[in-house]
Image 1 (spheres, one colour):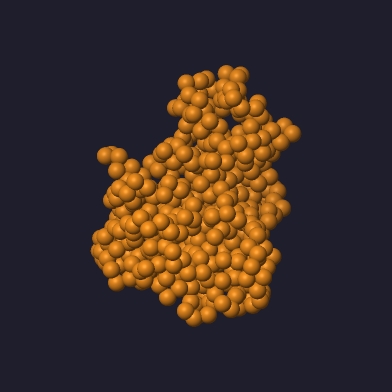
Image 2 (tube, helix red, strand yellow; image 1 turned 90 degrees about the vertical axis):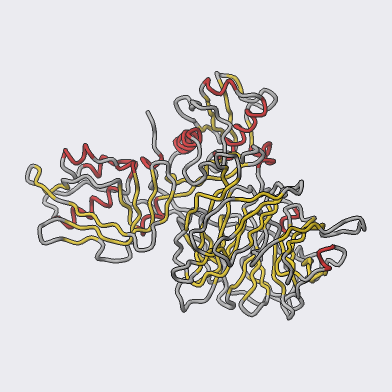
Length: 588
């Protein structure tokens, strides 16, 4: 029987946190920790059946409460007439509405009950989140009928409804993992599951969804090693921290490399459920040359954001010149070291990008229509600056794990242009359409499939955040599509960046609030103040990347730098935070 994620996907919270090693030297200037960690999983409220002679308003409120217990939708059906209960399909869609208003549910003059509230987002039958558009609302009228002398809901609603105050105590985010088109690395595809689901049921649901292929968010941008028709036999039991995935015979056709790729997908998908996985096909191990029980450590090469010393190295521009910020490991005093051995240092730069290996960079050359690329330590006199001609306004370039350099120019025109230069020097156009809005910042994820954009809306002049997916068109040429505005509850957004828990956004919770860094799920489903966010400075720019060893560095509105410590306090160094100020950049 085809199992849908939403059929059980309402029982958890998303926990966004992380720690890293950052410097302990230097004066601590900004120690306020106003930002709190996101709420942990709450205690689920068990739904109750309707009581005799319950009045209409209380009946519908009880019905909505029962809807949130997806492990027992039959409880909610007790609030409905037999005909409505039979027609109701709660698994089709979950609508999350704003429950901050006490008048979300009201009694109408005709005896019906109306649920009317701002829609926050929806979760489809795959467990994939879609933020609501601005102004979108829930407006449903529940009609009541008599059944054996008791009031019952007589019309089946479209899916199920969940109030926002229950969202974080009912749902948790997990990720399915698919492969980049070259099959060299993995890309996460977030879905929702119950937090209190037993490990075996959670593992079964995740693998079933993995074998269906990517959700609409990544469609056309990723591939899977699972052949069509591959299924998991019965279930995925988890015993003593080991999950057993028994694949159907359709996977027998896979070659050795494809089997290893599929194993990586499965292990990464189950990483938060079971640290050890046994995978079989036709009763035999999927991988002949590996132990019977596999661990994710054997597949770390598929993680583009794997921890490495290079990813936590901080760079920047000072008065247009390329710098390396040293001393962040606490071994010596923090200092801004000019990279005057690099050919990049010969030019004044408007912006800088550093590759993920930390040995090369690219600059937007000031007052010249050029992006220049060179090694950061170019002691070989035979080195040359590689240049790419540009036009109009050029955004800060961005690198992915393949050494692809992504360049967006003409950003201030009616037709912005996105191009990608591969490691062999070939420059390709990437088709895209921003529908009249203006790109302000481009940040490619290390996987090279997901793009993070800060855009300026033509109609309002306000910045917003969206993600997109690099896809291939019918001619196998790259295009940027699958745009998903995140619809964040933030104003005056000034910067965006990937980080280990998703996305960081610099913005305000209201027009008069202090600009601060906000932690956002990659699908926009949840927004929390970054744990430890300070109230002692206003955030303008954020430097971070998905490495677990990288902690955020913030440039405030006065130009000074602050970096977060392991204890979530903030450090500011006099040398690196005085004029001329430094624009911070991590590899990526």
